[in-house]
Length: 284
Image (cartoon, rainbow, N blue to C red; front, top):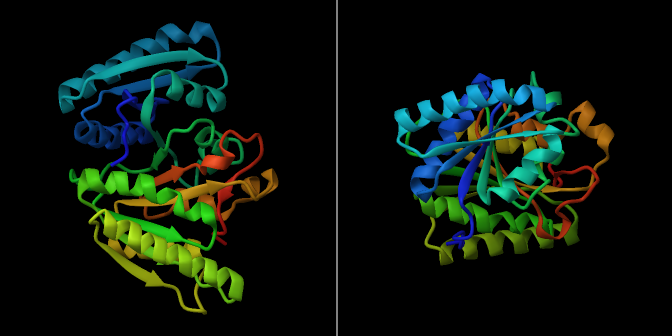
């Protein structure tokens, strides 16, 4: 299991909406299995807004502590929301950031070109949610899309960590590649994933896509919906321009999936903190 003894809390950005409340409910599940407190944070544009925001945030924190028996503290700061969340995550030594999104309707606000930078603005994994937890068992069934890229393997470490916490089962969706070179790379990634999960005594099912498929994005969402999965784990990367996020891209479909399944976003180690755009690797 990953050693996260140097982390201190689960961070939940809160904008006083229902989806933020849903994120807090998911955070409670993680906090209990990790035996860590929760920090609720809100970012205001000016210092004049701090007092009112602090009162609202304190009320939410108190209710959460009383209702769920999880130590809950607050953090208020002013500035640019897109930049501040990553900074706060580092300051409070967050294990995870659990963030709500309004799905497709609010995609430009929370999962658009700029908000994706929130997710890559720190080394901390983000769990992006829309709905409240379906059960109180946590992330029991995890869907893990896999392509031919080397970065695709990096999410396994975090995925295994979550699986060990909740006793999860993996459902690997392996892409189809017709090119000889990429097909070989994909085959190696599949073998690596199977070995990695087996060595960690974790159960998994493998779904290898046929030639005529709907694409890794749609197939991943379809399988996750069919299985009523609790989590999809994806890797972010940087091979797209800003304009594609504004128009809507595959990673947005994953994160804002209509089944409202939570999505964990892991940043590749070698490209964190870039000023450029990002996407989920080769999910078209």
